[in-house]
Image (cartoon, rainbow, N blue to C red):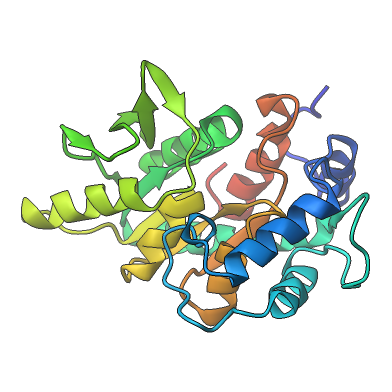
Length: 262
């Protein structure tokens, strides 16, 4: 079971490894390398709302960034089997994210939350939004009636998501975030000061010039490349869909405590 309360750094590292949020994660090496290759070959489904141009056309360059920022095996000859996320890099990412959340709270900023992975990360975002609202932030309410080719852009528990066929939808696309930001501009509403998200929601926001922080798995390299270029401020490496979403609770508690929002 998840540990109660707010863990110490060492306790959180142990918890991340035990629940496979980090450490020996479920995503196999061959899946990671396949996604790195597809990104390098220009498959925009793996660009996560970003415009990478021709800067990342060598999959070995992508692997090098992922080894540095995520902790996957850096050997290009290691093609199959177990791969890893370094739990210390996960916690370091949470600490960097906490610094940006603290800035938002101190400035009473407008913050937009969104997820393309509602089955795993919805409650992480919901709890963070609630803490920032209590601290005086304005949590952005998205305009009604937004949709993309995949479905409707909806907001539940302060978190924007894609809804399709009465189901919350997993998506890598940046189009839902594009729909939100375009609608806000069209209505004369200010853009968010900060987006807290994942997948294409985080990528498109950063590409659009909005401060963006988020979470990404070892097989989703685009946000880590964007962080290395400064387009996205923080990307926290983790397995974004483990057995139980409750496993993320200690991580969220640590994040909020580090941000002074507990």
